[in-house]
Length: 102
Image (cartoon, rainbow, N blue to C red; front, top):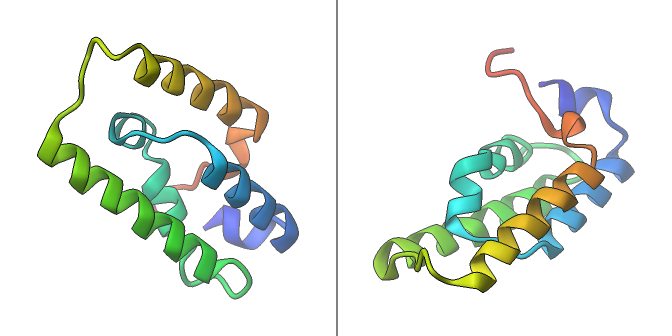
């Protein structure tokens, strides 16, 4: 788990805080897989609690969205997705990419 072992805890916390502040949709979570990446950090000594809470919050978002369904014509959702993509680039997404096996 390269992210947890090679990134300073303060930087991890900063990345998680930025991700937490982003407008999020279930579609974005599904397309990026970021929830899975954040979920892998839940046992991290310094940011585990924050990562666990963020992943749980996003899980609730996915469950709610499954029940209501997305509106493909919603311009706000489209703008949200664009802002998320731009913010991910600013957060240095390469630092948040984890290998699938240890």
